Structure formats: structure tokens, C-alpha cells
Image (cartoon, rainbow, N blue to C red; front, side, top):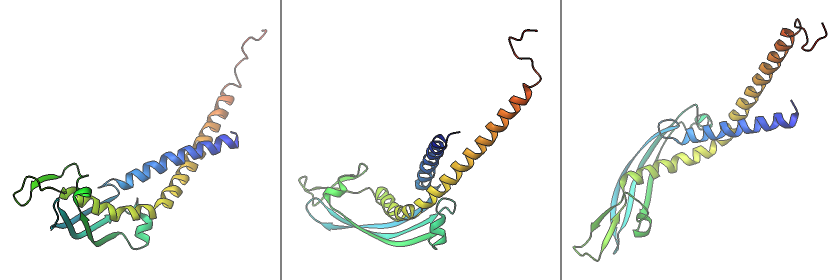
Length: 176
């Protein structure tokens, strides 16, 4: 096999496995487990401003986050705080409308607590994901080289077997 084709095969297999590992590590339950305990406090404003305080606990899979485990970050617990106003809270699709101060003109939007919790957990997961990108690339490259080596050995062995099987046969179109 030509070196250029070999490099192309290894590159394609590396990219495929890299994407698979990266996506798997970002799925809840596969790459990490986490929960957030949050409280929301109304701060005021005509359309509503909220402060979300709480803590986030995340545990990482040792297979998909080995660099985090080696760095001692196999589980992370940290405080979380963010402020939502009518503009940022309005982007949540699952938000609930409510009426403030008994006036129909002052309608605010309460952020969906589950979306806020997911955002809090992901804010802890994403930096660890970035930290483990070199591992995903190295593991993908090792898998690609192994797959390509095994494929070459199999195809060479199969080619030699076919050649030895055909040694005893008469060539087609012989003059006998």
C-alpha cells in the first residue's frame, strides 16, 4: 500500500474515533454524572432579574476523562452563581410566564430551573472536556494505527493464501 493512502486511512479512522470519543464524553451518564442544587432569588426589575445560587457536583468517567482523574479531578464540587435578567431568561424555551405586582404590563419570565441546573453542570464539565482532548486524539490515533496494521496483515495473509491455493491449478486457456 502506498504511504499516502496509508496516511489517509489512518487520518480518517483517527477522525472518526476522535469524534466518537468526544461526543461520548459529553453525554450525561456516559462521560459524567452530575447534579446541581440551586435556589433562585428575585432581585427586582420591571421584567424580572433573578440570582441563581447553589452548588454543582460532577463525577467523571475514568475511561473518558483519564487526564482529569490523573490530575485529581475525578469529582468536582464547586459553588455556582449566575444572574438572569429578562433578556437572558427570555432565551429559555421552557420558561414560565408569571405576573408581577398584579399588573398585566409587568410580565417577567422565570428561567426553567432544570435548564439552569443543566447549564451549571455543563459549566463544570466543559473545561474538563477541553483538558482531555489530547487523550481523545492519542487514543484515536492508537486505535487507527492498530486497525490499519491488523487490516494490512489480514489482507497480506489472505493474498498469500490465495496465491498458494492457485499454484496447483492449470492456467486458463492452456494449450493442452
